[in-house]
Length: 173
Image 1 (cartoon, one colour):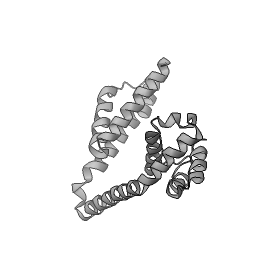
Image 2 (cartoon, helix red, strand yellow; image 1 turned 30 degrees about the vertical axis):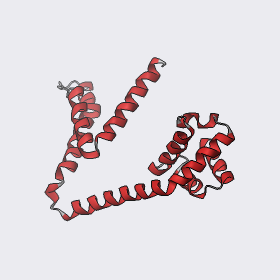
Image 3 (cartoon, one colour; image 1 turned 90 degrees about the vertical axis):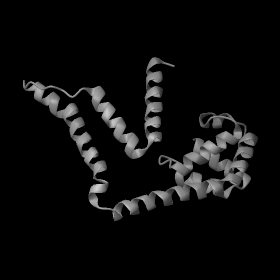
Image 4 (cartoon, rainbow, N blue to C red; image 1 turned 180 degrees about the vertical axis):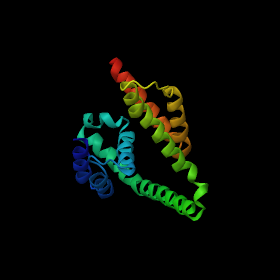
């Protein structure tokens, strides 16, 4: 619904870049650039993205016009980020296999640990075998370390924000 409102407003005010990004990047497959455009529209309107439907059509149009002026720079920064990711991938592929082996090694090790914790240990306990389970706090700590090293601190921050939001929704806040 929000996407339709924003696309309609972008069409009305003649913001083809914003309209194109919203049509191609939003709607079930919100990409980074699509999310950035919605955040920019909300920022230019002085509201949160969730509050965009509450704006008057005029307020929305003004925010979209301001975002249209920012869109070329946003696209350039997004493209620069993608270019950096591909450059890193190329550099890693040029190195010997063992220089990046820690990543896939940890992925498989964590996959084995989680599979044992969630699947193998309960089955073993159900058939009467004594099993000493991995402490879930240690398992979560190791997983968080790996995520922060491999995917960066912003991923851990986003996971933490999601966890806090989930707890708050359970508590009815």
